Length: 122
Length: 107
Image 1 (tube, rainbow over the protein chains, first blue to last red):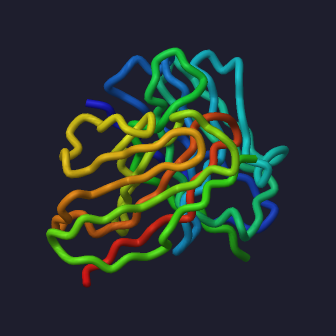
Image 2 (cartoon, rainbow over the protein chains, first blue to last red; image 1 turned 90 degrees about the vertical axis):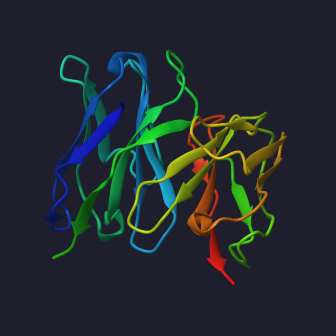
């Protein structure tokens, strides 16, 4: 059974930094792209970032480019999101999501974690 | 970036009704579109991928159609557990973009 468990969400001050983690199990982690998607309180879903299985390719939303860094450790089956220069508008539940196609850079999200809440406030 | 325009933003319907939600892409995306269901306090759940392929375990009352720029999610006979918010997502190219969501409420 595929499981994705996020952690690391906390209350942080504007300008601060935070690293989110997503522990994966139940599938061959290195074979799939992994992504972060966020949802601000009461709002819709927003794609944040995606990383290829080998970490050779990364993609970012314009809203986070230059501030967030996605990475993965395939030996630990863990996905990360390093978040710097945080702003109030980054306040959201952050979900990690698994890509649906083995070996592909693209495709739908077939499994999601339960999410972790990041609050940026002074 | 490709813009996804989803309609309606909200919809009231009754158990047993047939409902349709649409998404329009600002440029052609082939069939690279998925539909997701989200209930309050829960993670999104994949219903349909590649525009018309039913995800394993999803009831057959859900169906998807379309290609290019216009896509449709249909629920053939609404069940109580279907009242939720639905999103489309284009996975044709980066940045991926979601529709604004459709909140399906009980009439």
